[in-house]
Length: 130
Image (tube, rainbow, N blue to C red; front, side, top):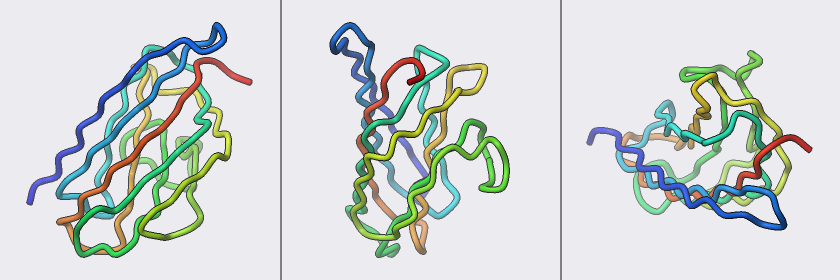
């Protein structure tokens, strides 16, 4: 099954600050596939992240974020690490970031095994730095 990552962004204004509620639906996901999230701004803060492995051989996920495609955890492009591997993760750690020049960040859900995994994620991102 070929990887498909569908990203939907709902922009809102909360207390005068722009907010993106990002929904990511992945199918055919393996440990290295990445969903591209294109934002209308360069600086942001992830304030809530939730992901669920809904089907597939993976059994668990361990999502991470980066600011370039193909990033590794030992570079400055790595911006956030979910340290717990589970079928459902929720993290409210605040991850401040500067997106790529094209205002993109990359989600790698990292299913434990297989390439037939379906993963649903919701990410809340505030515009600007804290």
